[in-house]
Length: 342
Image (cartoon, rainbow, N blue to C red):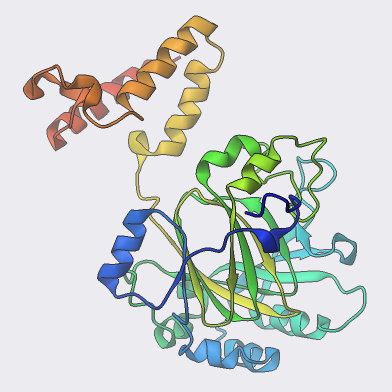
């Protein structure tokens, strides 16, 4: 980043790396690297991308496959400027959610183009396997297993406030241009994220006009940020937990995305264990908190094996590399402990 750039000058940020469409093996390596990357032209040959050259053509293309299943619709008033974020009270959002017929909503989005004071209407997170299965058949994604289904996002010039996902994300632009502002997962403390009780938790900072008096640590987040500019046909691989602020740059925009990777369940689901940690550790005395912080640093987040290198491998137990049998035994032990919780 330009050291003289203002925190709201997103053009000055480092750009996300760009490469051409990968093979499945190369894509697996990108996932393992845990870094965002633009896959230039990945879906340029999709029929949907070809139809997306004009709003009317894409609307007609989608409506021809509509099977009458209602879709999730989000709407914000014209005064919102298209910002999908919190309202004045962060217990509520600046937009409403409802379900409506796909065809009717597509027509409404198209009618709003060029209209003064029109609301911002969008179809978001529409599961295409269930609603437009012909789309899935005609616009294949060979990089991912068949069970990873696509979702559709389509609407006007929206700005979705900074948030993150527990899954990997492959975001494929089929109409309009998009900008993704990305922050590494560890910047959470500098992004001033809202409450967990009203998901998804959003950053309170407007990255285009940050209030640095209210959010003084935000410059540390923007110093670690990078930006991705996507044209129709481009895709962005975004590893799980990366924070992202998404701006639809044209009057009409459409994207298809794939989420996968949040496959852990029960006692091995990180988010649930994090919530358990809030119960167990947050209100302990400072000395106890310091002990458990050190235990986690040594045995969970430290260099693998370093803290137990002095113990013979066969005696390391849960502190070492666990076998499937040891993992099952530990799960059983924890289940019995939790069952005793009043």
